[in-house]
Amino acid sequence: MAEINRAVKGTNDILPADSAAWQFVERKILDIAALYGFREIRVPVFEHTEVFQRSVGDTTDVVQKEMYTFDDKGGRSLTLRPELTAGTVRSVIEHGLLNAALPLKVAYIGGCYRYEKPQAGRLREFHQFGVECFGAASPSADAEVISLARQVLGEIDVQKISLEINSIGCPECRKLYQQALKEYLTANIDRLCDTCKERLDRNPMRVLDCKSPICSEIAANAPVVLDYLCDDCKAHFEGVKAHLTAMGISFTVNPKIVRGLDYYTRTVFEFVSGDIGAQATVCGGGRYDGLVAQMGGQNVPALGFGMGLERLMLVLQNQGIVLPSAKSCDLYIAALGDNAALKASSLCSALREDGFNVQCDVCARGLKAQMKYADKIGAAFTLVLGDNEIETDTANLKQMATGNITEVKLSNLSDALGNVLREAALDALTETVAKTI
Image 1 (cartoon, rainbow, N blue to C red):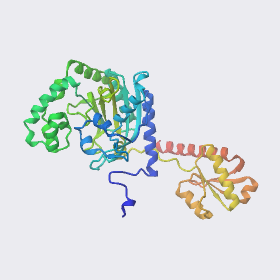
Image 2 (cartoon, rainbow, N blue to C red):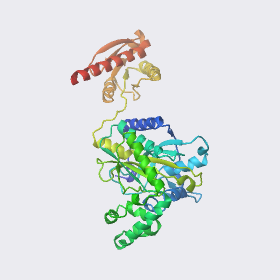
Image 3 (cartoon, rainbow, N blue to C red):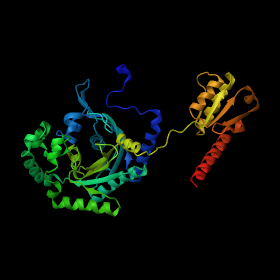
Image 4 (cartoon, helix red, strand yellow):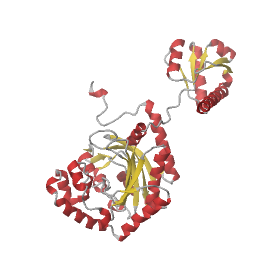
């Protein structure tokens, strides 16, 4: 097959048959975010490359190996966003949003781009839902953001999801930990991969996030960051755990979580699933109290999370969770002749304004072909329109599932269609209830 007829490796089409499920999930998560006071923000797909180098960290896999970076015609280095936090922080600083009432709470859904090996739940173009909260330093803010993620997963009925939390401390107490970690890793330097050898001096914690089996084996016995927390970071982490417990949210402390981006401080967390193989993390996030100042803004605390929608949809699929499908056609109007075609267009226009999903022929087909099409698209009712129906202002609504006929006035078609649709829905509900008794 020619390349022109193939999607680029690592990208995926969301087809019409699947888009309703995506729309349902997207609406649901933004509605839940709004309950917590998070309002949607939309930022560009590409930024100046420095936005990600300064925020994500030049020792991370994302910056070193995965970014789509290019020079534009003006010679500027631009990068397709590999995640959305950095661009959101840039936008918040540029537009002075931190001068308003704090905390500032924003949410987003958007595409991200990383050059990595495509596999289940991991694509080169993927979509992410996330929230960012600026100006809140309290442990209760951490717990609230975690609670939001948990509610999103719960309300779309995701099963077998567990919460893992950790604290990686502040820059001060992390110095002691990094020194101990560096000493341990140096003793094993001959076994580290080339990338981790380069990271050893600049950011030894990145070794803990390496995907190499040998590096992972070495990291398993490395010093634990929780043993090096300062008193303030210990108190903060205990506060997070206390608030989660008060909210009835179960969690496991996993001292190996460091997250893959350099801007994190203190609390980090992940929601993981056993239903998507090795790429188990569905949602991850934490604090990044120094990031806004690092990018030239005010010194304000901040935190948030990102949730991969492809991974989320894969979990739902693997767990057999059925999401709403696209609304089917309420009525198909089959027209016989030119006058009937004009009348059908007029009726469809009026019914659509009343909120009905209505279709009529736009391919100049005969009656038999029109009715076959109505059956294929799952039309609930059909109406055949000819000169006689137009003259008498009367036509028959046929319920496709039962064959029942209802005579209606064309001048009162909207009310009549509404009535038969409600009756059909009630009959279906009654039948469903009867089957469960």
